[in-house]
Length: 107
Image (cartoon, rainbow, N blue to C red):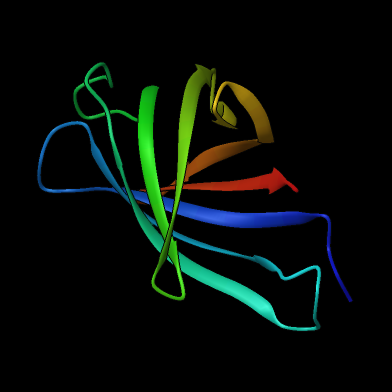
C-alpha cells in the first residue's frame, strides 16, 4: 500500500548549522519503501536550534536528491517546507523528541 506521506528525523551534526537526516516513504512505483539518509547545511539556522533555511542533499540508492528546506518554529511545532528549483515539493510539520527533530511530510 502506498502512503501519501513520509517520515524524517534530523539530528544536529558536529558543525553549527548542519543536520543529519534519515527518512522513509513509500515508492509509488512498487510495494517497497524508500529509506535514505542526507545532510542539511544552513548559514542562518539558530545556534543550537533547528529553525532556518537549509540546502539538503539526500541520498537514495547512491543517487543525490537536492532540496531547499525551510524550518519555522511555531511554538512547540516546526512548520517545514521542501522545494526544488523554487517549487514546493513537500510540506510537513515536526516536533522535538529527545535530541531529534521528528517530522511527517506530504508526498
